[in-house]
Image (cartoon, rainbow, N blue to C red):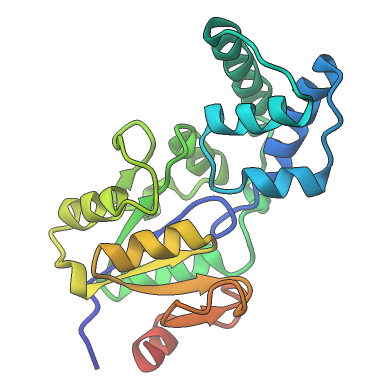
Length: 217
């Protein structure tokens, strides 16, 4: 059994489901541009940067815009998204997450966030769980997107943990690849078919405890 000194968590889809807010913000923008944008289209944006997401939407509408206009649209989307985030309530945290984080801290296992979101700290504040993290590595602290391991390696460094003693919790293939590229073990949160390369796949944190982690990974 390998030692575990730290756990690193992605944000969207692992701790909270903010995908619905991204969808609503992108849809509002697409509607203004006269582009049809459905929840099926939204799947194409999962794990994709804001500007690349905008390019995908513009391609759906066969539109081409100058960079300055695209920058303005991306900033507008983020403003709309933030309006939704600022209305978030504490109970929007996914089931079992807060208890799992508290159990890790009680067992003196380091806890870090590893997310590309530039709004991560605000979301943690709205969920009232910011104090449960020893380190927050978000989109303001990294320059390379997953599957590059930068975000998780920085998280391990912030916790003074060796990569081989870290476990990452991810719901996206790119995040899973980033964890493996960092030399870390990974727990997939979601579908075993999608996340089959993870060391362990769980459907969520309900009835999942640090003791289970130590036994199964």
